[in-house]
Amino acid sequence: MKILYRFLFICLSLGLIYACGKDNPISSEQEITPPKEEPEEPEEPEEPEEPTVDANANANLPVEGQAFVTDYSVPHLNSENTYVEHTVDYNNAQMLNYALEWNAEKRHAAWIAFSFDDVTKQNTTGRNEEWATDPLVPEGTCPTEADHKSDGFDKGHLCASNDRKFSAEANEQTYYYSNMSPMMSSFNGGFWASFEILVQDWGRSEAFDKVYVTKGGTLDQLLVSFTGTRNGNDGVLPKTDENGLTIRGLACPKYYFIAVLAQKGNDFYAIGFWMEHRDDYGYEYDEFAPSDVMKKYALSIDELEKNTGLDFFCNLPDAVEDEVESAWSEADWAW
Figure (cartoon, rainbow, N blue to C red):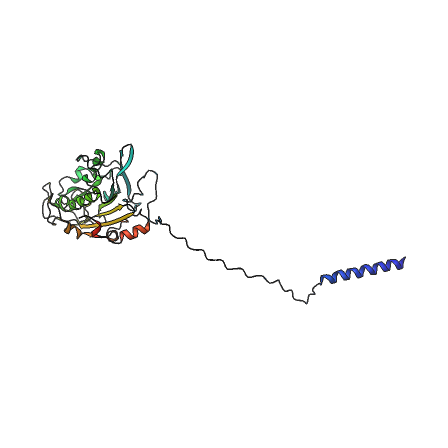
């Protein structure tokens, strides 16, 4: 029996040795070579996204309670000022009459903006002539009649009364003191009025579907230490102090500007006007500059933006804005 056990033990030992041999164990002296890894395929660089046709990096963002802030007439907003929309109800719909940005420190609008379309270009009502405090600007900052009294300057409209003749309510709103700027009489009634009439003609013509307008005076460039050479309509010689303020403390711009954008179908045209606030242009009330004179004060919107620091027509798609603001063409406009 012992011989049988010994024989089985030897057989078992030989079987184990044979099994280990099949696994080909590696001695400590052998180097283990890791399996070769396949090189990773380099990632394809991502294609830059093509800008969309409507891409707009500088547009005003829609805000609740500011229904018309994305209108083409409204420049890029300055958060330091107060944005105001004056609206009217027309045929059971609320529509923008004009918008403005109010500089409370200067007590003067930075700009006003409006448009002419099939409704707003209508000339169906008279002038209101009732001056009023603007209920939408910060309380206590809107000038009053006393601030304009006997200072040698006119209460010059920014949005003209004749710009808003499509409804009595629309015209009434143009007589808010927030829409007034101290203008020398001959400038207001003669030279400035020449450009107002020209823009109204464009807005009410059939040449365009819609005309967007932005107007204003420069609050960063005031008419300082000025004494006029002729009395205003109130019989007083206009004056400003070393800070560019009238004798009643109103900011008096040194320059005035108009930016115009016209649309016909999918085509856009733009032109700007830039003029110094002076009383020696040679035009009196109801004496208007001829077109050849007005053309000398025309410039591109890009140039007007450099002069004013404003970003006009920011709500246009960037590609359209860049093209239309870069130059103006005399042939685009009826003079």
